[in-house]
Image (cartoon, rainbow, N blue to C red; front, top):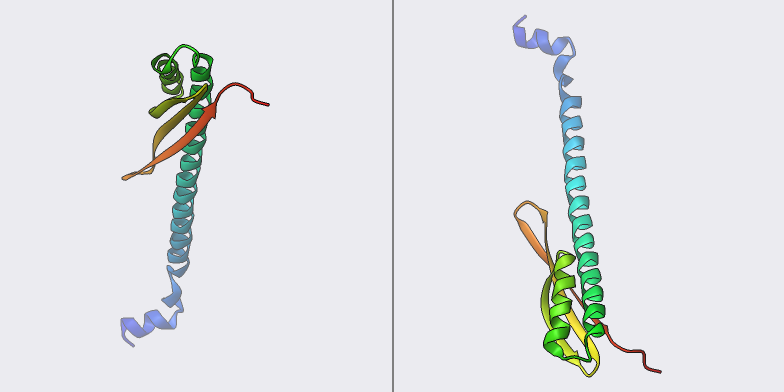
Length: 125
């Protein structure tokens, strides 16, 4: 009897199969976790852009009676304080329109930009 037939005869041919399956399941959980973290980071960035746009528009609307540069300067301050970047600011009558961006890297090597626009002005009715 050779060493090969003796080894197979003892039933050790399945040795290590469970380890490979466990590693595969573990890898699946890691990939799913990374995907979930990426989606979560993108959603947080989108919400951060919305909040920055809302607050920037409200701050600019408070100064809308002065002129556009003053209103937009105040909007820039609040947008920057909320860790966003002002893309566009304009005065439309007494309304201030503000567009902001937040850049996020949900996964290493991948960069996405969340953008939001908000309008604020006096109550009409």
